[in-house]
Image 1 (cartoon, rainbow, N blue to C red):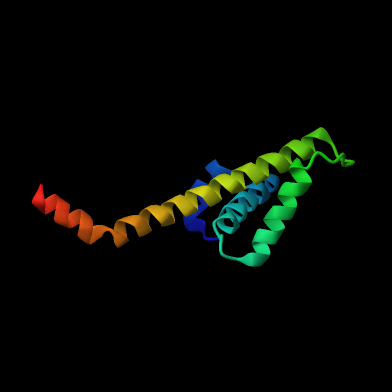
Image 2: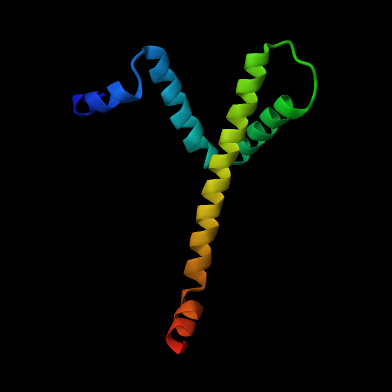
Length: 105
């Protein structure tokens, strides 16, 4: 990593464990926005089923809670990405219509 951002990194994380967690969050955020990949969709659906199916799994309460929280955060990123894309597509596709009514009014 570049020394140019050493001070910024110091404020974001101080230990190797925090660095790994931060990196994991960034990677999850980027992957969550890839809504067109069919393989990722299958993986997301499988994780959702595992977390929310109600089946009793041999794992700690902390692991269950972390899995559910991660899935919900990923879903929020995905929804945001879709909303942003849809919103932009709406404005681009309707710009002539909107411009016409702006001029007429």
